[in-house]
View 1 (cartoon, rainbow, N blue to C red):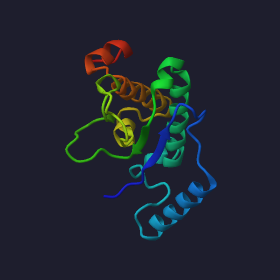
View 2: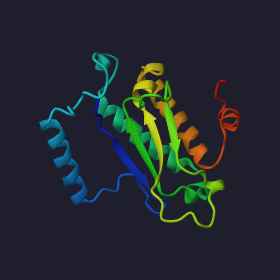
View 3: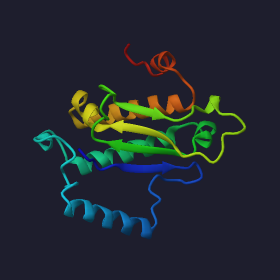
View 4: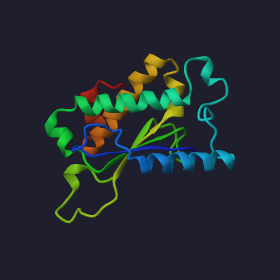
Length: 174
């Protein structure tokens, strides 16, 4: 099954995660129109059937994720925020086969493991899996809180923290 991805690349020099040029905006709209025409993407089709009975739509979920992401980035202490660079935040509805039940995933080389030769690399990725988050946090307030928790957890991996450290620091259950 093909899915629509919401991607945001964060650079600390930018004040907002919403930094799309008009050209990018037109390209995205044309791309979505093409996907819709080929039956790959339909607005409101990201969640399972009946999802909107609880609250909102997939559009609202993406807006919440973008809002929470901005809040998390703004709340990071300046020394950490300045070191968070070349990171791509990706929102997917479901995890890829073989990953199991995961809420988020950090893909990249953690900051403390990078050496002098770490240059000209693709962005690290922090992926959120909305379907799994939605399953354990079906109400809007719970969903918002869980998205924040998962973002902080995955950003922690970027800074080199392991699972045990993050569970202790963020007060997560075992």
